[in-house]
Length: 202
Image (cartoon, rainbow, N blue to C red):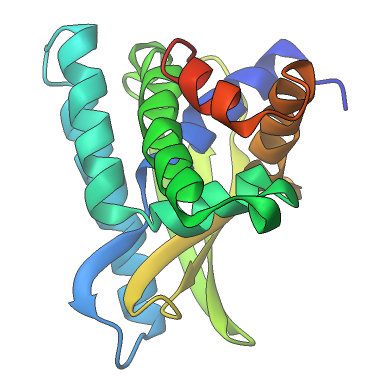
């Protein structure tokens, strides 16, 4: 799929948010629409705090990785982005990939966040969809028309988790999966090489 520059910018801002986000520390015994909305508000607040902190880019990457590790279901997201090769990977490889992916995402999208200072994500509503919640938002970035984004929240992992988002119908986890697949193909399907190289990319 070909994206125009504005779509790339949207992906950069929002996938970064998606990758950094995901689970509150509250036990997931009774996830409600209110809690799903509150999760998205909390995540946006944390990200904006880092963006407007005035820290160096390197320090910001460290903060983004810390937020990702704290709030994201890193194992689930990383396995989703790895796709079918995850089934043949060893437990040690999956763990190493998850850690490398975490660092890669923090750098890749952390580099773009300074471009979006002043941006705003407005939570509109949340609704139950089968076994998870969809939180609908409107995103406003400088110089761009507002656009709709849906965040998907679940408690299946034992925490309140943000596990994907869709910008105008496009799954950002699936988009990243396509990029990871291309990287793996370039390395002849060698997962260990991809893991090593992820620490140099992003």
